[in-house]
Image (cartoon, rainbow, N blue to C red; front, side):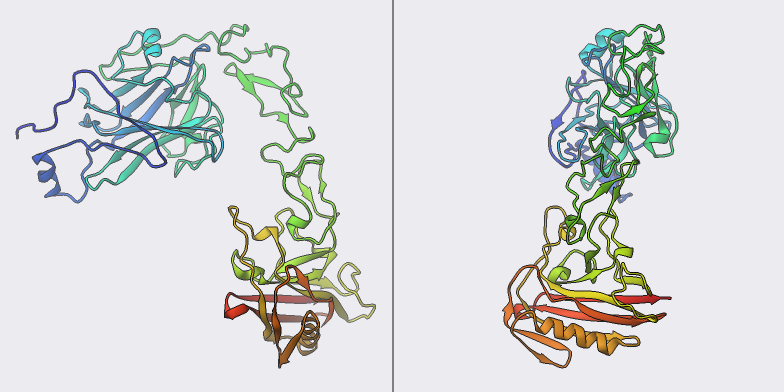
Length: 486
């Protein structure tokens, strides 16, 4: 068959693209594509039998010395034209930039284990090896980022073949697991396994060994290990340059040196008064957490010695969403006093509220054999727990409230007390266990007076209510289960 593929230039070139989704160029295949499509449902312009093998982000303090090396994993896969390397920068989930580089020619050597080398001009000068493709300066982030190899099939669908994320990269890394903690600065990242999980498959290497498709390989000699801090090194063996965990912003611990990079694994940030990654709080720093944001009516949060939030100082009264999902559930919430079952640092207040007979933190009576819960019904509470991705729960004027189901010994009395409390919130009429507000209740955070919900020891009372917005929508169904234990 005649080769009717588009003629490739003698020198490698790249195509760059920016955007949120990978941008690719399909390689025109002429009648060859027609022949392939006749016998297969999916045809790739570039092979998927390629994986990332080694990455260098800088060398001896010079960020212009960078390379990326791919490895062909099965014999006969030299067809890489049309494949794409994508580079994403940024250590957080928002401040990230994406760049892409397209492979514009096939390789000569397609044997399993053969390499494909991308290198910057600065790296080519240092290595003395001709790369297969030029890596533009500024594409590869030296400290924190992600690199992926991907291909496009005949339907213009993208398949991400392999990725490596490093330096604590925080954006989504697909199915490749958590990013590497280490970075490819003054050392390379080298693949050591093929489990598909970055932290299992990659390690740091002090002596990079770039290799091009022709088989030319060089080894860069490291200066790490001479006990002298050279360019690109943060430390060297026992020479820590006078630094300690405290000088690095931690509260305590033992600073160490690994591969001439700081090893902070034994440094402890908790106690420095600043809420660091992995900490819920530190000293008086709770981030945006408050007792109120966690569903309590007030109080003061505490912080433990392990930098975990302690809600013991919050009020014993808190709001209990009767369903818990984001949506119209905030039309109504229960307000209950139960100091023995305070929500924790996640603010979750379960529908099942348990009290031990005689426990003053939740049982408001002095009678043996019953638990008397203090409960109120609240409408349109501005509950921070219902905020997701900046969107708050949908509030509405309240047209009606009703008990649609009640069960358990003493349930009728609890329903009567709840109905009476709701009736007194605003002008209303009642029909059985339904209360209709006239006009619709349009006041944010309006609560009934607390009512006594009496439950016999060893028994459970369950209430299920429906709150309806003006015009019949939205509707909010909420439950509450009160359990009295002996």
